Image (cartoon, rainbow, N blue to C red; front, side, top):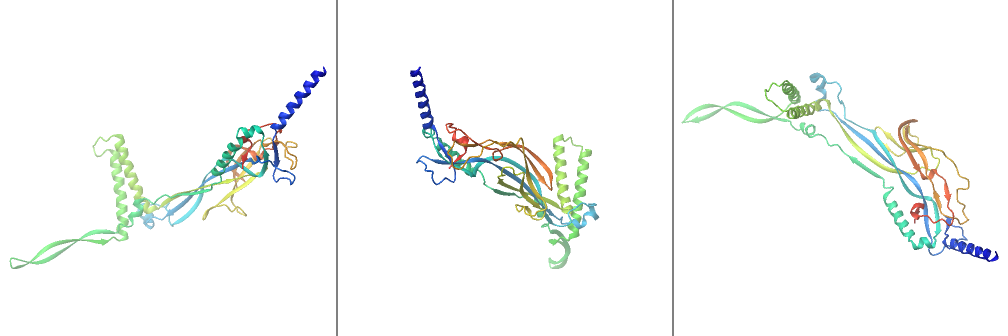
Length: 366
């Protein structure tokens, strides 16, 4: 029995020494002045969840038609653009989540022999560098809608040909003779002439379209050919109508930026939309702020889950918390984005010192 006890004690001692050699020490930063790290130490950040926000704003440019003053009188058009103006409106908001380092939760680690042998530190460092290069790249992009060529160039057509008839005096075979002659020259079109020309063109297009639909040409067009001709006539009619009713050009402006909500932050202001100035990130004292509302599910705090500053312990890890995210404006829900996993809304847990997880799953090494 005594021999059996001695073997058991020896086994326990060997097992304890193995665990001791496999243990690592993890210290919260900043370090206590009494802590001395070994040469193989490294640092890591806990992960946190950032929200990538993709906003599309439409810049509307309304341009008055060249013949807007004649629209109602000649064509009966009343719903027209009467003045040039520019205004902005929100078109779309999309979000997605990504994991980034939490700069406020950093730790120093003295790795175990197993981690050093597997080169886990180098792999985790590469992952961290890739993450830093792919997030927080705020972008701004404008997609401009060009003015239609017909509308842009029509105002330049200001000349027309006219023929003048006159009599030339010539000497033919010694006899003075008056000979009729014509001369063609370019003259400026008057505004009334250009308006009448456009009005006549619209009337002719409508007649041609009605003739096609009625089959007055006595030609057996295929359905595809007939539809193509009608579409072309419709486009030509709209081009001329735009000269009276005006055009609205919509440019798209895309903003991409990142926000990181803190734990328990239920309202996250994003931006405002001013009809005259567009998007602004100044949300102070603004009347119309678009924001994210975050609502956690089954929020439960675990006792003693936060790390102590001085005592060395195992790795700190985060378990994500399910959060409902909605887009809000003027206190009303504009859109339900859905449920997302937020790391910072979960509790920080302390792993046992003899547990050796993959560093890529723990956080971001630096």
